Structures are given as structure tokens and as C-alpha cells.
Image (cartoon, rainbow, N blue to C red; front, side, top):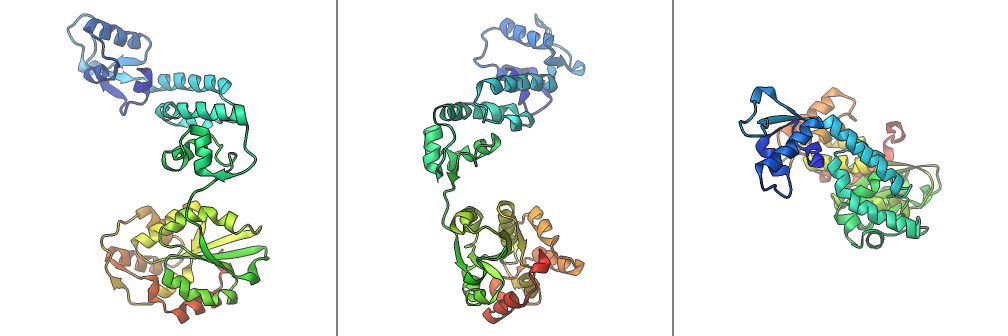
Length: 338
């Protein structure tokens, strides 16, 4: 019951709500009252005086204040105890700042991971996520589809367990003249038309690759980049997508997976064109828009994009013709944007 009180959504709880927390339900009022009085004596619950007490025997308050700091102290002691029993490579630090329910939900998997580490140790060879998932949890879908990746990241073991992400292969073209340089540049474009238009110009640019984003697919497939392009260098990514709510949101989510600057020369060229009307059905991500606008140094540029979004207008990538795309890519000063 203390675990349930620690995770209760409010700091106060009604007597009727306390009854619902007890599992299995107690058969008599006296048994229930003794349980609550014990929590009062343990200072886990304290009476909200303004609400008063009932007239039954023993008497209980109609509402209680939950001493969550005391409950968290017990929870932290529990974590300390598990530190001594689980494998030393299982890092529990992240749980100290989380709801105790997270740890309780993860505990069954921590036990499985503990067993794997004690019998197998850390793996030497990387394997696909479903294979490692089955080894750890007896469920090939656990890592990718059932929250296993988040559990392994919380205990700081995802990388150490050498898991190959399962995603569609990253689609890109390579500039052979720029594969050996120390600083390498990569352009991600959202749409196929733009990719095809830029492709002939790739050898004439300072970029090492041109990556086809295929809409949202690149958010996942970028995980494959280091394996598909195992070139040791300082890698810099630029992103160019539709100048609309969804295009900006895709950049935002991609940027969280792989740091990527908006390809400003392309976007600025779009702003010189007549916008199109439509896509009012798209959902706006305010945080994504704010982050995107912060890369535009001039206030009028930011205002133009904001007004564009507010008015339900947009610029598709196709607003820039092939020759214009290629010229911008070849002639822009990309290093100054880093």
C-alpha cells in the first residue's frame, strides 16, 4: 500500500480512495481502520483537520495528507538494497529521480538482465535487436516494441549490450572525392524529387553524402549511418524539408536523434517564392517551430515563417527547381553555418 501511496497522483487522498487502494479488499471496517491507523502512526498519513473525522470506532479522517518524502525515503532504501543484489553493471541511479512505479514495472526485466549478465557476461559481437531481446527477456519484440530499449537506456546498458537497431536501411549517395577528408558534410532531404534533383550535383559539392529522408523514415533509419558509412571523421549534418508544420516537426525529431542544422540557404530561397495554400490538417509542434526559427538570424525571416504557418500556407521543397537547387548547393558557404 505504501508503494501505491508513493505514486498516488495527488498529495492528499480521501478515505474512500484509500479503501480502493487496499488489495485484496478487507472484509471488516475494523481491519481497514487498523491498517490506516498504522499508517498514521508511521507518519505516512496525516489528517487534514479541516475535513474532520468520522463517528465510527476506530475513528478515521475523511481526508489525509500523504507524506511522500517519507515514502520516497523508503523507496531509496529499497534501491540501495537492490544495488547489493543485482549485477554491478546494472546502474540504478536513474531510478532515484523517477516515480517508484517505474522501478516496480522494470524490476522483472532487471532480474532477467541480471541473470543474463551473470551467465553470459557482456557480449563481444553485436547482434540485431530481436535476437538480443530474446536472449534477455525471452521475447524478440521486447526491445523494439515493448519498452525494452528504454529500460536498457535507464540502466545504461543499451550500448554495452551491442544491439544492432532494427530499421529500414538508410538511403544515400556517396561523393567519392570527399570520403577521406577530416570534416565531412551530409545533406538530408525529405522528398524524393529533391533528392533526384540534387544527386547529379553531389560530386561538385563539399558534401560527402546526399541522404534521402523519405519523410519520417529517416528519424529511425539514421541509426544505421555509422554502420553503413563507417568512415572516421567529424561529421556535420544539414536537413532540408518542406517548409510546413510537418516538415519542421520531422527536422525537430531527427535533430534529437542526430544533430542536424536546418539547411538555411535552401529555406531562405524558398521564402523568396510564392507560398502555396493547404495542409491545414497538419498538427503544429510549437517547440519544434520555436527551435527551427532560432536558426534564422533575422527577425523578419522568423516573422515570415511564423506568419506562413499561422496562415495555413507552406513551401514544398519542389518550389525550388532542379537548376536552382543545384546552384544553391554548390555555391553556398556551408562551413560558415557550423
